[in-house]
Image 1 (cartoon, rainbow, N blue to C red):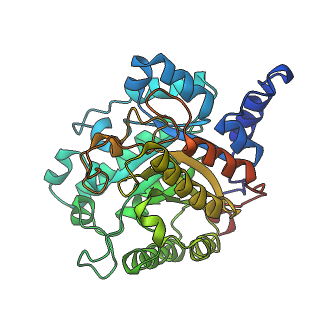
Image 2 (cartoon, rainbow, N blue to C red):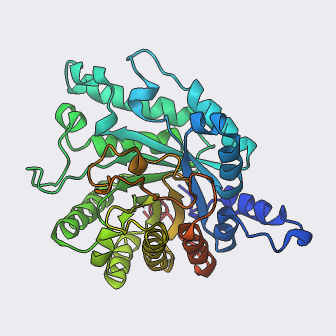
Amino acid sequence: MTEAPAISRRSLLLGAAAIAACPPSRAAEPASLRALAAASGLTFGSYLDMDDLRAQPDYAALAAREAGLMVSARMDWDHLQPAPALHELAGVDADFAWAQAHGMGFRGHALVWGERAPAWFAALPDRAAAVAALEDHVALTCRHFAGRMHSWDVVNEAILVGGGRADGLRPHVFLDKIGPDYLDIAFRVARDSDPATTLVYNEFGVEFAGTEQHAKRRVLLALLDGFNKRGTPIDAVGLQSHISVGEMARFEAAEFRGFLDEIAARGLEIMLTELDCVDKAAPADIAARDGAVADAYRRYLDAALAHPAVTTIVTWGLSDRSSWIVSGTEPEARRDDGQRPRPLPFDTGLKPKPAYRAIAEALRNAPGRGAIRRAAAAR
């Protein structure tokens, strides 16, 4: 595979177009996050749900202005292939068309994720049938979007520290039916099916100091080394970056940058793929809470964006109108005082919060990226 810059030509052109679209007479208007990111050679985007965009034209306009990259809400395997012979890609095609119409790149999440395996997969008769189903799913989906994707999360959340396995892999149906090499199979088929896209392994819970997260980092690095040893193609690591006000006491910027160094030393890009902030531990007072959330974003992004291997930032939503944190279904995110969480850059009225200004300032201060080469090109 020929060498290619990790920051896609499309992303740079889109960013330049976003900047050029602002005439001098509007110079006083704040720059969008996508434009601020592009100015530093970065890509900024967000997870977006087309149901929200259709129902809320004001939110759609906000997303079109601020995001240069879209992650669709309906790309998991169980959604795309609810039955073995049924591949439903029309919904994702509509999402892609919306992104394209608004000058956005498009990012795939996620081809293979144990929590979103289709129900029928567990009933397959043997390993050969399971491998064939995995290969068919990855090949069909990647070929459908070949040459059009910014990146793919090929495998999502494959690690579980303390899960009872020496290799640290998370037990689920893919591991049961195929074995540990389901990861290698997925990445190889993805590369064969779309050589132009960036292939990502995506993981959570590695951003902070502490015994469990340090152990998870070691498993992740060992996984990457195994890929390298076996010649498995991979271009980037996605750090989900679900940060929280409470955990920031355990955030050590220098140590985190050292972890980023270890990933980059393996020739890989780094993407912040699901950025948001749990405010459970923040004060009830809105101003104080928003300040604590903004400080968490600022500290985290200042450390991350100082590293030249970080190329992409994706927030897991833009507005407090909709978020897994706001939904209240996860105990670790639900506030004890019952107040509605405020985890994202814009409030429910789509007004920018201190979190927005913190993200904007971090993007504005980020050093230029330079040329970061893919691991696959170096092998």
